[in-house]
Length: 120
Image (tube, rainbow, N blue to C red; front, top):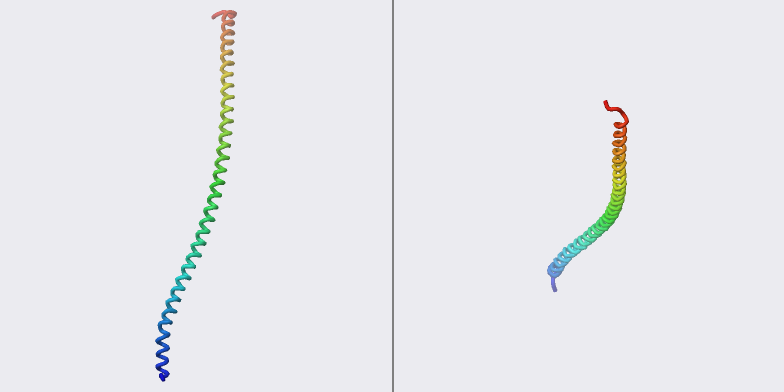
């Protein structure tokens, strides 16, 4: 029969590799936990990135709509300015014609006055 010390030594010898294996498994479990945490953090970061991307997309679409409205408004204003310019051009042409007629009439009046009035 084995003594108590020998039995304890045998138990310790059998337990030592098991304790080492338990320590190794705990270390691996810690790594798995870290990987799970990293995975969760990456998932959260990806969700934040996707949310930011969607927000930027919506902002871009709003800016694009604003730009289109601004462009349409600018085009309408240019068209109105062009129409006003054409009207002014017609009015100036009409004034030129009126001025030419007035010049002719003034020349006629002056020539008639020269005939009627005695020369100095």
